[in-house]
Image (cartoon, rainbow, N blue to C red):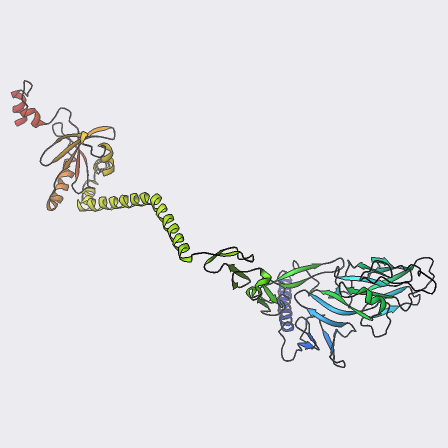
Length: 533
């Protein structure tokens, strides 16, 4: 039973994987670039994915219809009566024709309906739940009336979004009409406006009559609009009733967020990213081209590099502009220096050759100064390396490896027998002349201190290379002799051209000195005979 359950789990998992793959394939097919079967325009309006007219040419919820009965043809959202004036992929907006909420004509683009009481009117035409809704803070709630009323703008949930009131003072004289302000303003006299902080797909208005009026609804000259800020002239609206005004809609590609959809499957172009859209009533995400790129992030390779150098004035580059992927480089032209991002910031060098000469001199001076500091360290390093190589060469030349092999059997001798040149230089203060204690035709003897012992160091003048093997054998033998009448050989140094021998220092002098000394102090004949025997 348990095995059967596990098998079912695996089957369900495989089905889920296949379903996910098929879903991605369907999305990829829907997001394909416009082909010969997909319309790219309707009238004067360009169409690109995620929008489309024919099946398979649009993302879910972004279908359009093109009415060719008009000249030029008119574009509408879906199959509704919402006329599209412009589509902006980069900003994620659609500009539409928005009719008066209290319509003066039945041909309004967005339905303006009035209930039987005459107090409530609706603005609709968009599908509830998105993906389109009124862009908050980019549109205005606009009322034109002289009925002395307060008008409330209500959202889909009947909550008050905003309100404004209009008032017209009495006429200045008998048989004279009220004179509207001729300035393009909407301050409450015959006209009022308010912001729309909450973006819904539909709205309703409620008319609240202000005393002493007794009207049940607007008169024929009253109008209420949801219109794009800056798209209208208030003075014109007061004297000319318009059926529609432009309004701006926001849209999102999905009702999920970037966090919920980390791969942001709708963002198909390279150099694009996912951007969350959050409002009071709707959350989702849409795609943007990365900085330095522009185009359509919803299609493959839709985000193209911006050639900043083609519009150098927008980027304040007054020097030589070099375009690069996603950015640009600005520098002063050859022969000038300064700040290329300010007009006149690049100053011409008076004498380019002189400036070049000065630059070369400064560079050479810097190099020489660096060599003056670094040179001694480099030379010292080279000398030390050459000295080390010379020591290794002399050691091999003097058959140091042979000596190591001969004395390796005796560990006590091997540890002290081979002495480095550095130790002997330290013991004799670099073979200072004051350390000389003897010498002759074959070499010089120095007195030194090695490992807290006074030693004699013999530095020969010449050596015969063909006899070096015999010399090494004799050194190995002498190193093992320990007799009270023979000076003990402590070690040798093979790191010089001529090997150095280290003996124990005899403070009483040599045998030759005692045998041939002149003076009252000399060896007795008995000692001389014993030495001879």
